[in-house]
Length: 320
Image (cartoon, rainbow, N blue to C red; front, side, top):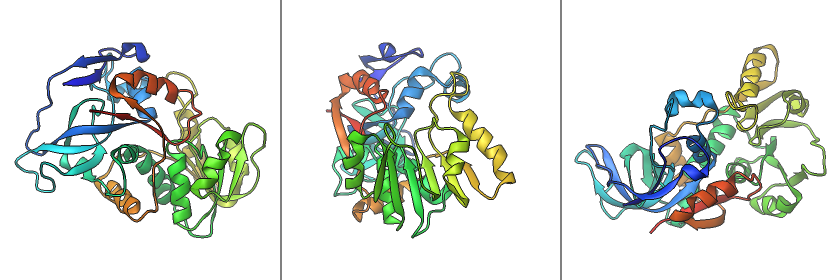
């Protein structure tokens, strides 16, 4: 089968569109004929192996997972003997190492039935970014109806879903984005937008979700109410070794000494969170917006364009 694979860390030049063996299903596995695969910043981190501290988990000298991609949607081709939730022909979405391929294999607990109202492309855009947005607002931020919420990076892959979720939970939402993206963010439901290219961040907020990752901690705290919550979700910048993790560590160390709640967001895929996303999407509360689609051989271009940091919504690889 065809896949996007790499043998060493580096830029998009280390990626190759190549033939690899079909994955084996295993006892608890589900073999998926991939229809679409989401492109998100984790793909870039897996490709480059940066920040370098992440190689403790990704592989010290070379990637443990040869095939890129994480988010997936597709059709069940085969199931392991212990799998009861799915059968061949089911439409599913979820997370799987190596989704940039014609076929991928995931444990059954990493998947859910695809909401009928979502296309395969929309479903592939939802898992990682959707779980991050949900964990940031609900689990770390403890969002409540009537709160004033600031979402930094509101037009991005996570941010545009966070805007929709915050409105679903009854918050008043201000989205930080470029002027070119303001209409897009307001169309998602934001009550107000701030153009970071021409305007200063102003206001006082009960909850701030920062998915941009490059603003000083004192500035963000000045925008919080005295007992407000700051959730740091962006991890870009800050050097090759720790990346943006340094700011999150400082926030965690400071949090016990202030009434403000300072949280760093570590979002891990969980079956119950994926099912919640499916329910929200089915109810119409959450709809991923697809900015652009690419073919599987165009994966390198998709990752390069993601690195520009100015896209609205999500990009997706269409496979098949």
